[in-house]
Image (spheres, rainbow, N blue to C red):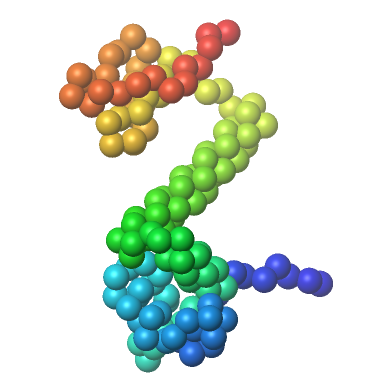
Length: 145
């Protein structure tokens, strides 16, 4: 039975990752120190890179060649990680909603969801207004039946 390859598995030592990314190992160490691409660590504290890390290193190299500063690259990578985490969360919530709906679960029609100023999701009771300080915006309102 074929299993999908785990692109998050930390399998490459720094010399192999550097060769795959066409970079010098010292460059990878610098990116690790700056938090641009942070590999996992083995029990002996040596760096172990995954295929996703190597792909990220290639992205860093491309952005650098296009003239983006290292700080700009760090920020781009940080935002990409946030987007990936949010996409995973949306998938989890969509799956959870599908399970509730398939199980005949009743979703409380009196709940309203809003986004807080920090991007967090706030649950409100119907008729309740978000606190002015939160500057929440209503995202979704379950229609009444």
